[in-house]
Image 1: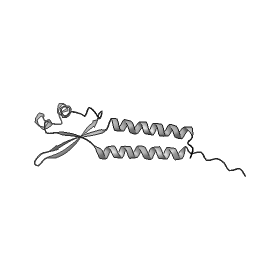
Image 2: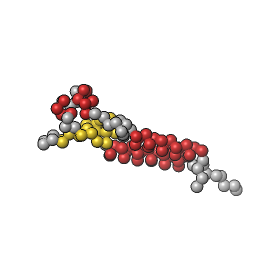
Image 3: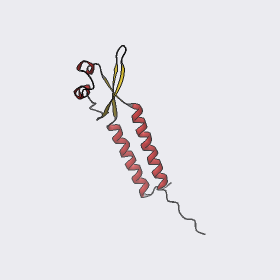
Image 4: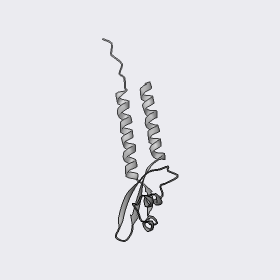
Amino acid sequence: MRLNRSQRLTIMLGGLGVLIMLVFPPWVFTIDMQSVHMRMDAGYALIFDPPKPDAAWKKGTLTKEGAQLVVVRIDIVRLLIQVAAAGMGTALLMFLFHHRKAVAP
């Protein structure tokens, strides 16, 4: 199957979008103590520089003591949903940009 110009552009932009999603993944703060289990959205940050719990403490979401018990993790479920949506969107655009040749009578 030969790709037309629109399809090649769609694949490049879809791949670039997924690459950006992987470099700036969604993060989540988790706190697991004896009777407290809490997850808080930590936003998006560079994969090599995860968000610090101190940022949530400064916003007033956590106490200073609570910020020391926080684990910062990549939100894998949200990341997989984003990548799947980008893949489906790219596939849909590939289908829509497919030009069929007219059959001569």
